[in-house]
Structure formats: C-alpha cells, structure tokens
Length: 168
Image (cartoon, rainbow, N blue to C red):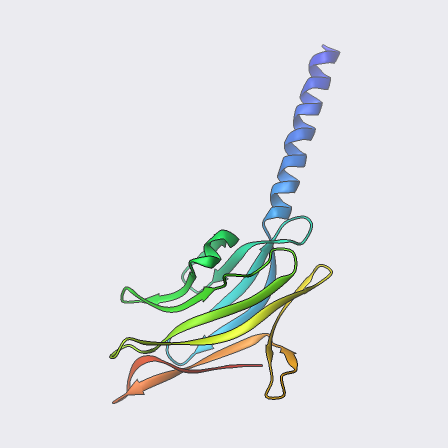
C-alpha cells in the first residue's frame, strides 16, 4: 500500500514538473504592437521562449486569432497578415540566433496592383532574459521600439498595399 502511494506521488510529481516545463516553454515576451489604416484592429507580436529565455518561436495575436509558429519557420517566412489569399506582411530571417537574436526583415505588399513588395529591416537583441526590437536611426544608432504603424497605400481611395512603416 505504501509503495503504491509513493508510486502515485512520484508519478504526480513527474506530471507536475512536466507541466511547469511545458508552461515555461510557452512563455511569451511581448515585442511590439502593429496597427494600420490598411486593416482593422491591431497585431501583437511576441517572442516565445524556453525556461532559459532562448527563443523558440514567434507568436502573433490579432482580434481574430492567436498563432504561434516555431523559430524554424523563420527562414521560410512567417506570414503575419494575409488578406484575400495574398501575403501582406511576412517576417523572416536567415541568420536569427535563438540565444542572441539578430536581424529580421518584414516583407510587405507595397502595391497589390503591380505585385510590388518592399522590406523593412530591424533587429531583435537580447540582454539577460529581456528581448528588445530595435532599428537604426538616421545616425545609425540603435533605437528600441514598442509600436509599429503601417501606413496604407491607396489609389482612388482603395487600399492597394502598405506605403510606409514607422516605429516608436
């Protein structure tokens, strides 16, 4: 009887320790919020990290859905916003490092009529357990940001893409 109770205790302890590890793997660090006059609502971008604060993926939450994608998808591109079957905003990097960060590129639809895409480059840096997005200002000095605004490109009042991206 005592062996059975101890066995159940260790089994439960193992289950709870797995739950806490799983929870730590799913921890999110908010990076920035994107808004636009090209689409309704906002998009909250977070980094998912493991118990050592190493990056495991990216999460984005809109009014309609919550999506988490593994870091491995970053080299092919992570679609952050799509409309009418067209990828409007895609996050990618070929050299991002899970422990230290690195450069990231937002590829965005600039002109849907002519199918022209542009890019916005920024980086994600790590200091201890903190991760921070930043861009180089006009003097080349890194500046952190927490908001991103995507200005719509319009023709005859109809949105055809993203004209510019600004951060604060």
